[in-house]
Image 1: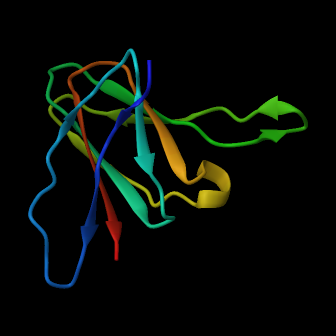
Image 2: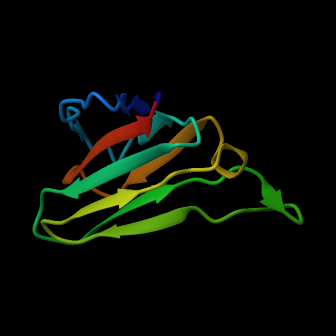
Length: 109
């Protein structure tokens, strides 16, 4: 099945309303359009620490690069990014280990 897209909210000098959270999908994972100034907000709605992963593109000496893991503490929030398009690509591949993780994405204008 296709990855669940997380819409990206553009932050401007005029200000923006908070983005709508997307429920984490541990089965299908997520995609986020990446401009190089994109960052992700991962909020853990549960009482157990959770993990978000972001895949890196490419390989080193023919070996795939290990995904970047971010620990999201119980009832906590992590702001992660920005993501260089050379290393992460124009579309971020984001995974979560549980639906307790709620995602938002932002980028600068």
